[in-house]
Length: 249
Image (cartoon, rainbow, N blue to C red; front, side, top):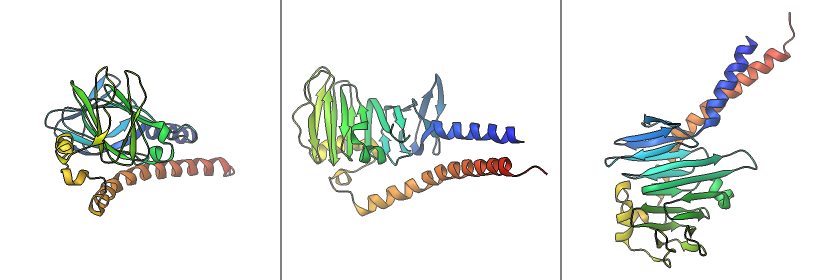
């Protein structure tokens, strides 16, 4: 019996350790590439480190991570979870977007350790300071806009990173340096966010109370799912300890 309990702990903790987030919203054809296998994605799908999430022309998806980071990707997009570590002293969140549109809202890792949060695009590396930002990755150029907080955009071509503050946008063509950040227009943000079902008014530098309430509601069932795993693991560990400490009859 003891061996079975220990084996169960190993299996459950292994599954929970691999899971870094959950798909909280999915529309259309969304897939995950994991270790060479392609799987269809629906709401509740658990994502792991190294997963690549792909959306088709009719699709979009949103992912909630364990640290409350939220990533939304639009149609015809490809998003990879390069690294996601929450172990104390080793915290890191590193993602990449090779094409399409994305929106990022940083969680605990980005807020506590901003230097350890980054998103790599086709032409740049984006660093953050506890923020919300958007990107459109195309064959012509990357468009990166910040709506809350601030980000740094470093071109793969070299040069110094540029700081993009809330309300600003920069453009980076392959092999070029980022353009000087400037104030973005409602039309530019609308073009970037069109497939995310966000209006230009919702993309302002201020987060509305309604949006915050909606985000908290969406997050609640995800965190409940994480709590179920943790509670189950704690119960098994407690049972094992009781078995070990209980004297034999």
